[in-house]
Amino acid sequence: MKLFRKAKDERVVAEVNRVYKIGFYVLTFGILADLVLQMSGFDMQVEVLRGANPTSFNLLEFAILMLAQFVCIALMARKGLMDDNAYAEADRYPWKHYLVQGVLAGLAAAVVVCAVQYGSGAVWASMGLRVILLVFAAQLLFLVPVTAVLVLLLTYVSFRYAAQRRRKKAEQLEDDGD
Image 1 (cartoon, rainbow, N blue to C red):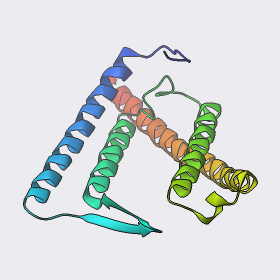
Image 2: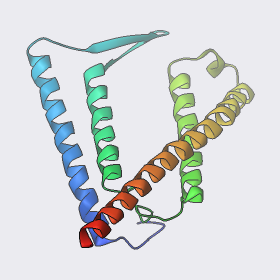
Image 3: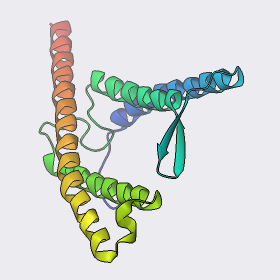
């Protein structure tokens, strides 16, 4: 169930679906290439030792995921869309919406960081509830403002670029009509 139901323009939905389809193909091709490379013996696993728990992740998979995300954002911006929601073609920057998103993302990041640190046996994990709450509060005080500012900055840049692309398209259509 959606908490906020906003009307979506069918044309915007169709454009965004085309963009996500291309992003899906990039992601699928990248994962297929990674599987072929792994079967041929080429592996880009990186091991990170944190305490007693070694962790590994695949750099190529991470790069493919980021590439697919960047392709989707770039293609949407080129089509004059800044997002896939009701603010896709907004005339004014919806800063309240993105401020809430940034704060919620910062809260989620703080919870994840503390949980990962606690699970990996951080020194503070065994010092009692007061220290754990103090560390969590410090994570919140750092991650929430930083994440909120970054979300606002990135979405504002995307908004400005998409608005510029929409203006250029409108001018081009106007010139073609004359």
